[in-house]
Image (cartoon, rainbow, N blue to C red; front, top):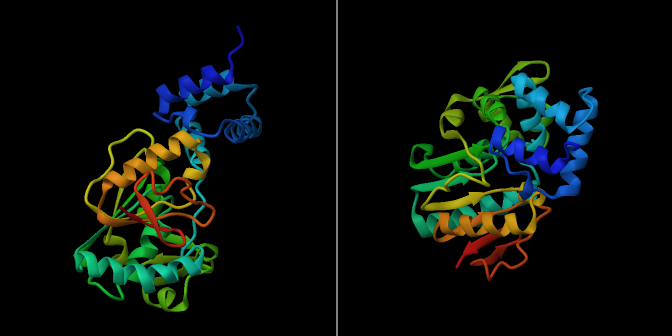
Length: 259
């Protein structure tokens, strides 16, 4: 019997803890088949056997699967809302001891952006920023804290000058102060236990790749993770369709309050 995608999904789950049933199938199959072809394998079975034997191929697959697209200050108008409206709201509710979770943080651009903006208003020693991703390679990259000029394109000049040091023609290192303010951990949104008593969760441009059922499950868990009146910050291509039923109220565009 031919080894098909259904079998591949089961084997990948056993190998990586990533449940491909939770991802939109047509989109994911297209991506995986493109990678299989690019890497010179004949099909799903051949590629799976290759991943079992080659750890670097397995890591490439996980990185490819988790779609690591990130940038500092991505969608600037949303970060302006965060600074002008959400930070005062959070401080009014919880004081200056804040806990923020950047879920599916990719290469760290997002949690470091949060830290830089918050540092203008609150000592970072008062703030706990947790950053998580399923991909250990991007977490290692984030901890290193060296970024290309391109990933800093949208970052306001004040942050670039204050928190970065140029290391060569095309790369900048983030300051130790900002780096030390973020805790990075491996975390699988589809499987692992969620954090609790979080004042704000940031999860942008990730759940769009999941099925509607998986999205709702994640939103419910985010709701349970948030403290009373906590904020969920989502991406510019997303909206929570049944927000009220899931326990959220739109606060500002792309920001939802737990109810």
